[in-house]
Image: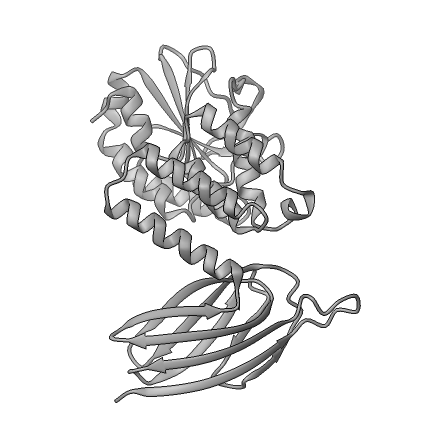
Length: 336
């Protein structure tokens, strides 16, 4: 049976200085399943609202940002992410054959993000070259240069060109040209800090840093008789980090064959330190593992905010590879 639900939510921004930030949102929902709840949240988590309880809501909406729709039925939970700006917006939410589709009328940023997503998916389906994808990403970056979605596009460019300093410099120049008011948006920090870290990391003097081993003894990183040191920045609440550890353990002898010393640096603090110690005991990782100290932390000095991060250093502490992908390290060291 087809169920049609019409919900109207009036969302107001209560600012003394302007009504330009008001977001008036109307929602029409079409579903072939019985919907128990529709929770609407923003990315920051300071707004959470269930449309099944009431159709009116008042909150301060000062930012253009990403929102989530969590649609709960008897058997499933569906999640969709959308970007909203301000104004009078009409949302059509469709749940048909276990597929959620959302269309928004009146939102410029929604249309731009939808165009980006469609264009990117088409390129991937067509097996586009790296050059074609890079061209598309920079075109989309320039189209979104005046809104915070530009930082999401910028992160995609960064991830696809992690060791291409020319591309990263080009990206940095574009981002630096944005007004400070836009750079203050909470989505900017990850891209700006990671870009800065990568572009300023020509040489890392690891002798300036001390770390703690599992017995709480202060230690330092020594290259010894190796050609390289692989720094693995991670923490125990990072599933991709733990997944990579499984692979690293399987090929640990290959790293030894390439005269590469592996040093994992955990940024766990507080109660997570005991979790780190238990993890090391359980997993029995055959390489050096240290805990970052709260003061003079290498992770903080390099402004690393994305995990895992891998930095491959040569004997002179020069950065050979700086990446978030273990495969990039394997490629450089010719490990299969």
